[in-house]
Length: 426
Length: 199
Image (tube, rainbow over all chains, first blue to last red; front, side, top):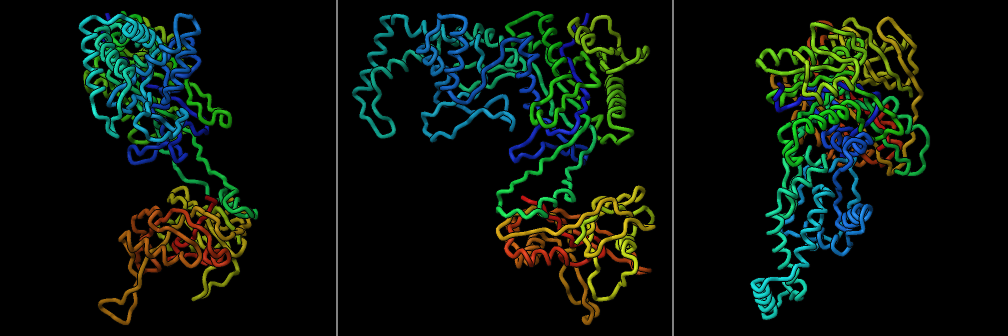
């Protein structure tokens, strides 16, 4: 019986010349590792690519809504909710959205940093303190529950005790001297604030229901969420994703010999002949992710291990197939992974250090990268006495008995994951 | 002017003195004269003792395709057209020095490398400011390990510094002159060739 809690995914994928992930200066993202420059694809870019892939849509229908603008959020939610039922009302949707983010100390942190590819249209509105931004991912299922709570709370008749507290509040506000910073609030505002506090209590009581509903958006269950308001629940992500880096060095050198050509033609217009020298590079990338099965079960509202493994299977498929969308039309880097090693383990273990010494070109980088990864995995496995269940998918694999359990088809490895590494001996 | 991509064939590349001598072989029949600038500037792109070195060369004369020590991989005429106000990216590896009198023999002048960042920035400002507008504080600077050479049986050492940044053209004509004559000292060791591209 396999009861390992972590699944480690190690993927080698070779991209033809492309520029898949840029920073805010429009330069290809890179990192120094082992003393040499590698091209890098950030984890947020990878996660977003997974979240927005057609495959995700097919297998995991609900994904979170992510936007920084509340009015857009209200529009999105209204569209979504009114699509399948007329039970929702825009007035209350707006109210609920406002309630959800209304927080005196709105932090603007997000589990997913915005990467350069993620251009949610952000307008610099005047920095009024009224400016409300929603940065945490929203789950529709969760919002439905929340909507109901808000509507019920706001519409419920007040108890005598509550009436009393409210009238005291109103009295206090009416007799207060308004200041510039703190102008007089209308009775309506006071009442809203009062009900909001009441809602907060209800929400706290219902936290589990909300959490369960939130887990419907699997991307939140996988990547977690940093709550941005008191009413929103925090969620620890179940999946950790590393920045993908090339297994070998990639020089950033611009080809000046070619670049000078722009100077020969007489460009009469100063600065208008703006030609960007965009760097392209190809390379074998190592992608790594680890999945915490128990955490995922919890995030999904306490589902069985089987369901978590089913999602693990989808994660595996996406890690082996998705390509960030940048410059796809001009570079078409639609490459699939050549090699995937999956292990069920007691701990998350990255094998990035297999490539700390950059792989040298030996008739290409792919074959030596695969060898490095395998050797390094074995070294760690033996060196730390790890108890793992391991299997491999390799394109064009011949049946290699005696070595690692190797499949020549990705679905076979996916099934192996979904079936809890059944029948595998590593 | 010509811009060429040249391969220096493997052989004695461990001695930096041999680099420009290998390039000279591409200009047969040209007399080398003391006190006249050589007909070419160059820049080492990649030094590989076994495979040979990859070099960019900027020359007044057209090089021949191949000699026993060097081979032209690609070549083109290069007559850049500049105009005032144009912004350009530049890359320059230079020998940043000042001349001082020898402590032992005051009659003898020697060049010493400037190693402090402020000194290097100031040096670049002095060299460029006649032709272009440059904000030296925004220029990226990279140091290199010293390059050792032997000229006959005399050993020597060159310290190189790479500058990379953006400038704005002020005097198109004099910029062209600066590009073809090179910036700073040690041009025989691959210093002074400034590469440019549009910003």
